[in-house]
Image 1 (cartoon, helix red, strand yellow):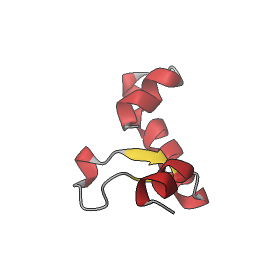
Image 2 (spheres, rainbow, N blue to C red):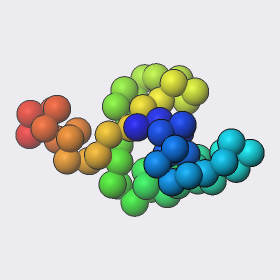
Image 3 (spheres, rainbow, N blue to C red):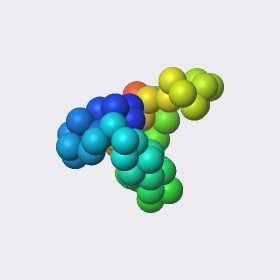
Image 4 (cartoon, one colour):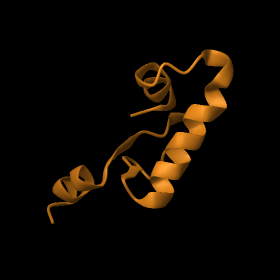
Length: 59
């Protein structure tokens, strides 16, 4: 999931891009999503659900 995908799913207009960034930030803080690659630059950051991260890590 990336910011553009959030905007598209929730029908957020381009000029309100900050809203999609805020939604991602809140989801990160609550732990429902995690970064796919923690080493990626913020502009290229992708996110996955917490349960997918566990499966990916093999735990």
